[in-house]
Image 1 (tube, helix red, strand yellow):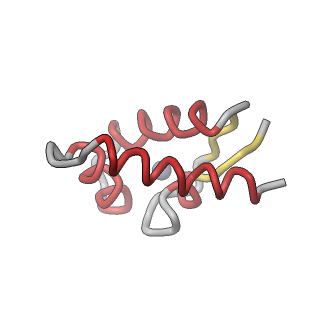
Image 2 (image 1 turned 90 degrees about the horizontal axis):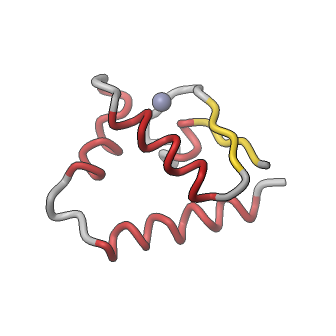
Length: 76
Ligand SMILES: [Zn+2]
């Protein structure tokens, strides 16, 4: 199990101090995406817009996930 803060998941481009714990990167990412999708504030805007952008392709998603997987691996 690893724990990431919302801020870490958003690559410090906003977010908050809420923590998400999971056994896999996908688990943590899906918990955070629900949290971001239900947010309405400025701090989560960049991530929310990326997620809701209709031009956001599968390739973008994979690119983001590859980045997050790297962060996951770095974390003890
Ligand atoms: Zn947050």
